[in-house]
Length: 233
Image (cartoon, rainbow, N blue to C red; front, side, top):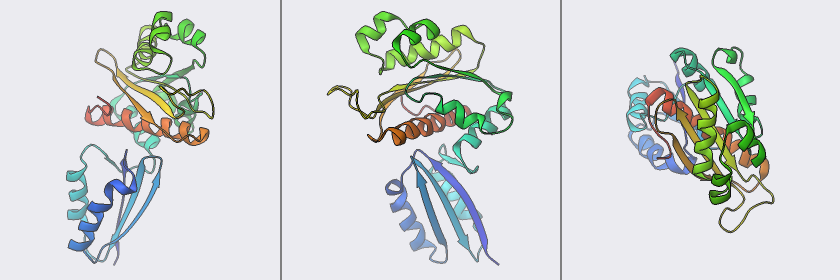
């Protein structure tokens, strides 16, 4: 009788895990392994005629803060927030509401998602997220400083427990030598604690860059909720 285990790894690509899977196959040649990837998330299916509990534990031990068992990262975030009875607010720029759309596609998102402010222009960042004009002038819209103020703007005007801030250049135009197309700044905030903020360099294709920003944001949020682990800092 076949045994099958399905799990996912967030923030990994196939090339990252290929050596580990090769070693696993050498040690357990009876195991069939299938892998698919999507924007920094891997889904792995292990199948064998023998029990797979020990192999699954090996994965958990090797990647302790990256393994989740839901089909998608938004489902993992959804269940984590509901289980923890915590709330979330979003400050979106280049993603244009795509983060909120991914979460609200799931029923019962209203248990935790309070809303999203899509502040696409600098004027709206200043007005609705309280980002300082001096910060925008000195550091630019795609910067750790601006994303930090976007997050704090959410916290100052709402009672949410967690916040995501994201600002970037999805392209195909708008890049500079210092901030090329595909540069996206993502921040994960938990009320009363230091924000976890960093830059990623996504594909220059607009749709793929937005998808990468959403996927990375949700992965980083899940790790912060479930494992209290920063992704960028």
